[in-house]
Image: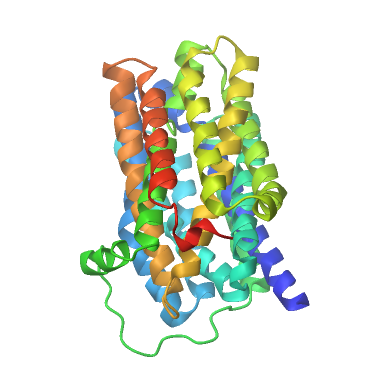
Amino acid sequence: MKGKKASLTVIFFTVFIDLLGFGILIPLLPTFGTKELGISNFQIGLSVAVYSLMQFLFNPIMGRLSDKYGRRPIILISLSMTITSYILFSVTHSFFLLMVSRTLAGLGGSNIGAAQAYIADITTPQERAKGMGVIGAAFGLGFVFGPFTGAILSKFGYPVAGLGAAAFSTMAFLFALFFLPESNKEKKTDKIKLKLFELDYAKKILGHPEIGILVIFYFIIVFSMANIFGTLSLLGYEVFHFSDQQNGSIFGIMGIVGALVQGGVIKKLSNTFTERVILMGGALLMMVGLAILPFDKNFLEVAVVVSIYGVGSGILQPVVVSMVSKYAPEGEQGAVLGLNQSLAAFARVLGPIWGGFAFDYFGFQFPFLTGAAFTFVSFLIAYFLLKGKKTDHV
């Protein structure tokens, strides 16, 4: 048990430190593109989307490689790519270099399937939701301290923020190098086929009676979230006239709420409600937050509404991933979770592109209202399609 707790602690700090670097740049990218590069909101959406495009293409590969060669080497290699991307960002002076930097960052960020498989390796099915919540909490805390740190570093210039992100990811690399043990004790010995996207395998998994519904559900909620990845900072900057520091604080508040929810609230909810009911509640909260957000008037109102949104999104992500992992065939945890993350990454490709386009051509409200509408669809999926399934019980 002590070894399991130690491994959970190490993977938590590895993901947290890495996400700290990621959180530094996310709130700054839209204003960096606007102020420093003079690019359009649609181009900003593309720079956010290319990161997720790489994850869409390479998450399954990373997951399969981790099944064969182990989780640890995949995590280390991906962290080294992340470090390089942040250093490149710090010297970026053109849209082209920004896209190269975000492409490399996306390659490095394709390790989430391996990290989730790591959790699956060291937890029982009954512990799985709590274990996935550890990664969720690391993400949340990364978004707490990252945006606040980025807001401070941005006062000294965007290059300093990029180097700060690189420094934190370097810390994560060193932490994993010296303290992260290998969790995959039964590595696959057969040859693996590495494709950018395995359509046949995706069809197989989507055809699974439980996993297919959950993967689609996850895709929809991630698309809804991704609508505001680039546009939330633009909403603050162009509509509410927030500074980089205020935008960073908004993202930080979302991170605090997400960390609190994923770090402890989920366990209490799972002791009281079925997973299906938890999913419906999370979808409703997220929908309300997205629908109200563009109609706020000041910083306090935005902070309250993003907290409502943060509770909903914080509930949904680890619970869905936990449910997917429970139904993954033995020996395919990395592949199934990698596929799930790959499709989620594709949702993060479509979301920012649509968000930036809608913000520019239909009005600043549309990315948020679109997200609310799709989140309502996910509620309907949970209500009608998960009813009576085995997933209806914890």
